[in-house]
Length: 361
Image: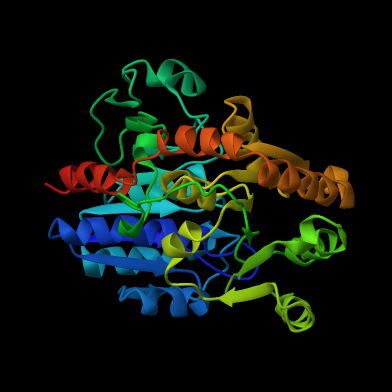
């Protein structure tokens, strides 16, 4: 049995749980049993739609050490083979305690070099061994490698690293997607995360619809399960026939395939768009997105519109400017598409599942 500890709610969105579902599905294809552990029942609808078993700790997702007594009871009852954690609130003490009983893995976006784990996964575009210093000296150029053998309770920081975009854990629908760059750009996909706490999708729509050129395009807006601004988006949809708001999307790869341009916040969606090959305009609105979107921009893979927290509405103006630039330049869109498709092949979840399964042997 593999246990996966992740949460989804209106504050953090669904990204952590969604990428873990991709890993869970790959693990199941390898014959593994998987059970999710969540702080509360906010993630239940997402997990149930994908057929995942789960248990609820009835704890505060922000203070993970407080859940340890309940988690210890589960550990004693369930005897899992591996424990995979995906949370920005995980602590050194939390992992050290769990690791006394079971091998531990961590999905790391923050380049946390001091967390005790047997397996560390950082699939981001900026992830390489140099970020982890001497601890990752054994990692090869492809971003994978065992540094040293670790056993539960040992003092070593990490035993194995999986680094870089070969390990992006996408769902199976993003493997081998056919996509063609159309001569005429007509459709723009807007996705701003599961909760869109600042109402950025609505801001982007209003700016685009007020622009003499951008207003003629068709807009597909993906609204996450925890988006408190959905009524505003639906009101805009009601007033503009070229605006379509989509909730609880189950065919994201198809939706991306219909799009000529995408506008996306930093996050896992950036890698999904890469696997499909949709030219992207990216931006950030929380600190942990900044390194990701700048990594794409520095490698000249996307247009970068900036940081909403720093620029405010000026960021939205920059997005509209990039939309018009991409819509007018077929060759530029084709170039972006080819480079993105070369970055992500959609098979990362299977590679992670292979390594996680090996720890359970």
